Structures are given as structure tokens and as C-alpha cells.
Length: 596
Image 1 (spheres, helix red, strand yellow):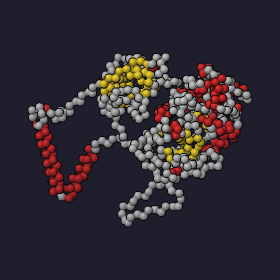
Image 2 (cartoon, rainbow, N blue to C red; image 1 turned 180 degrees about the horizontal axis):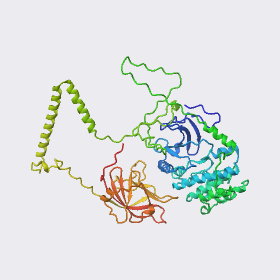
Image 3 (cartoon, one colour; image 1 turned 120 degrees about the vertical axis):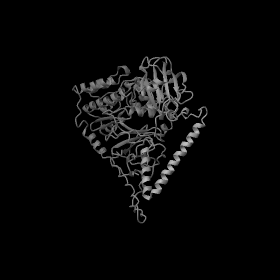
Image 4 (spheres, rainbow, N blue to C red; image 1 turned 30 degrees about the vertical axis):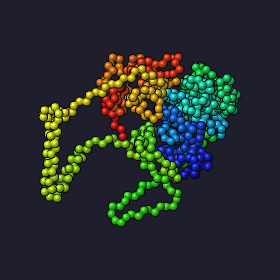
């Protein structure tokens, strides 16, 4: 167990209730805890530090949270900005959901202000501009942060890093929040969040204004106290901006406008920062942070180094007396290195598919005392494709066998060839008998399917099955193997063949996780042959491209083909959001994709 950490208190020791290993990642220290869970320090196989956030048990027990968490993490993995900490790995299916991001060796904005006081104007302008650039990338991926606050902004030597984007949305529909509790930090919420109204990218702009005020003043713009009191002031009162430097006043007040439609866009925020700094383009100097804050980064850069992985055991000798077990040096026991990971990992950009392959059927990894001796996820061999018939290898073995027999004597070769010839003769006789006994063949071998000169009889196309007028609600999906095909949001149904997502903050879309889609062009005939021939594959299609009557071909990984016809969408005054489709399914119509 890692109990020795630096005296600064940045890296806290692991305690009795902290895990030693998370899906192959050896934990070295605890970095902190928050409303959603605890954060730990670990390392990749290449030695790069990562921060692993383990979700609290209260959320882990909620099936809807797990579904949302998986969905939000997949979206977050598309965010690759200069001022964000990228998500490089995750698991929503294990006992405790978790995600891993790049480790940022710097304090949070909240820690920096609490320890060193408010920041100078030049630093605040560069801070806000960097956060705005991060939001530009986050919103571009269809995500609203929803919980932008000083503790979710880390200060690095080359600028801020925004973390935990979109994860708060996963908790919005859980049983913990369904009673009216809103996810987010009350002190930095927007009025629409406090009122339970629609969340948009402008919600993050309001939070950005509060973050800017906090950095420049040293205290929240709407004060502190009970959650109800703070939320009331956010909705009904003006912010307290006494002490805010004049250079920041326009920027902050415009961001803190109650009406979301009146707030500046992300691009306008960046322009306001440039104007306030007296430059048309902000230039980030080498030392953009105060000296005291920069010193904290130096401290945090000295993270606990990964302990060396124990060497593999020596190979057993091929001859001589039995090898004696090596003498173990005195010291704490070393945890055994797991031979397989038990979760589907997502490789970081540039690592390639063999970085952390999925291994199915592995037993759950149990934390062991002293398990922090090795670091990072233990690499395993990448899954191999199904083996083909190795005809060449078989022939080579036969030839080797012949040579061996020849070395033993010509009689052995003769016996081998004689026996082989006899088997062929017997097989030919059996084949003839079978052919002669085939009903309605008239004794003619050529009339039998598969006879020499004739290929196997072509398989008939499967009969289509139609399902009319399916109302598919937002965040529900269809599985073409179901009978009947009907909307489902069950977590235990892994076949998400066709899903509908009605986003609050970006274009709606349909998607597939277990197949591939093709939108047919006007005039194309929606048939099995058309769907088999099409190769313009995609995993998502925006619904604004799918007018009434539009058709899509869906080919699932399990060999089912479906023709999906759009019949319409829910009216604006309907309390439910759904699309209506007709589905025609040809089951087992193509070869399924081979999976390992």
C-alpha cells in the first residue's frame, strides 16, 4: 500500500477503504474527492501520469446513471482541445464506474485563490480566454459542461485546463436527483439551472462569468451560505462585484446577464478578453501565473514515481536437477501482476488499438495488499482474429511425416501411402453410395447439390418482417433481434442497433452502436439487394437530413439487415420527444461480423 507521500499534502496516502487497483491501473496516491467521487493518481504502461476518478457508490447503484455516464464519457472522448484534460480511458460497466484523464500537475483555481488570494488582471484575462477556448471545443462536441466552477479548472504552466465536462449530465436523471435536486454547485449555477429550465451553452457562459469574478475578487459573486439562499440571489438579485477591477467589469457583467439569450458567445468572450488586455490577440507569456502559484505547479510535478514492476520468473532449465526457488529478499509482499484486464478500455489518441484491448471472460480483478508495487494497466496481447484453415501448414506437416517415415525405411512409406490410398478409395465408395441413395436423383450424381461441377444450392433470401409506426422516444433504441422490434432503454440489452437522441443543445441524431447505417438517396429502391450493395457507412445521421419518407439501411454486426423509413416526429406541443419509423427486417441476411 502507498502510504508515503510528500509533506506538502498534495498527494494523500491511500487508506483502508481506497482501492489498490482499478481495472489494471495501480494507484499511487489520492488526489482529492468531490461530489461525484474520489480521484487517484496512476500511470500508463509508458509511465505517463493519469488521474482516475471513481464514481461514488450512490450513483453506481443507479442503472440510469450508468447509461448516461457511458454516453457522456463517449462524447467527452471526442473533446481534444489545448485547454482540456482529455479522457483516455473509462468503464461504465464495472462495480464502480470510473474514467481516466491526463494528469495536470497544477492546483485547481479554487485551491490557488484560497491559498494565495485573488489573481492579477492579466492572469484573469488569460485564464478566462483559455477557459473560453475550452468551452468552444466542448460545445462543438455537443456537450454542455453544466458544472463549470473553480475546482474544475486546473492551472498548468501553459494555461488552464477544464475537467469533468458533461459528467454532471449523467446524474441529472438518476433517482438521487429525480426528486427535484439539481446537479451542480449552487454557488456557480446559472439562473436557468436553479429554476430547472432548459440548459444551453449559454449556461456555461454564466458560470464562466462567476469563475472570472471569483478569480479577480477572491469570493463568489453571489455570496456564500445555504444553497437555497445562494440560488435565490442568483435568480432574483444582482451580483456583488465590489472590488472587481474596471478592466474586467464589462466582461463579467455581460456573462452574468440573467437572460441567457443576452449573454455573449464564446467567441465574443475571447474578443472581450483581448480588448480588455489592450491587444487584438492575447499572447500567453512563459510565466502567466503569479510566482507563488507557479511554485505549486513545481511541487505537483514531483508526483510519486511509479514503482518498478517485478521481473518475470526465470525460465525452468531443460536439463539437470530441479531448479531451486530463488530466495526472496526481505520486504513487503508484491501483488501478483494480473494477466488480463476485465474492462473494455479506450486507447488515448495515437496509442492504437493494441494499447488496451478488451478481454472478455476475465475474472474481476481483486485488490491485493501491496498492490501498488506495479503501475499502470498491465499490457496484454491484442485479441487475434479468428484463425483461418492452415492448409499450407498441414501439407508441410505431412511432408515432414513422409520424410521421417522414409528415414525409418521404405516399408513405412509404402504403408503410409497405401493406407492413404485405401482411405480415399473408401471415401469415394461412400460418396457414390450416398449419391445413388439420394431420392429423386435417378442415380445421376450430377443431379445432387454439391456434386462435382455444381456449386451448393443458393440459399433463399430470408422473408422480411414488418413493424409499422414505431414511436421511438429520445434516448431509446431498437434491437433488430427482438420480437417484436420495440423501443427499449434496458441496460442489459447490448444490441443498440438504432437509437434516437434529441439533444437540448445540438442537432438531434440517430445512431448505431452495433451496426452501420446508410442513408439512401432519393430515388433509390429500399430493398434487401440495395442494402447489401451499399457501402456508404456511418454510425450517426443528423435528423435534420431525415425528412418524412427518408429511408436508411441498417446492417447489424449479427447479420440482420433493416430498412428504416422515417414517418415523422413528435409535435412541438407534445410532452414527449420521439420519432416515428417503419422498420422492415431481414434477419440473418448477411454474414455476421466475426468478433473475438
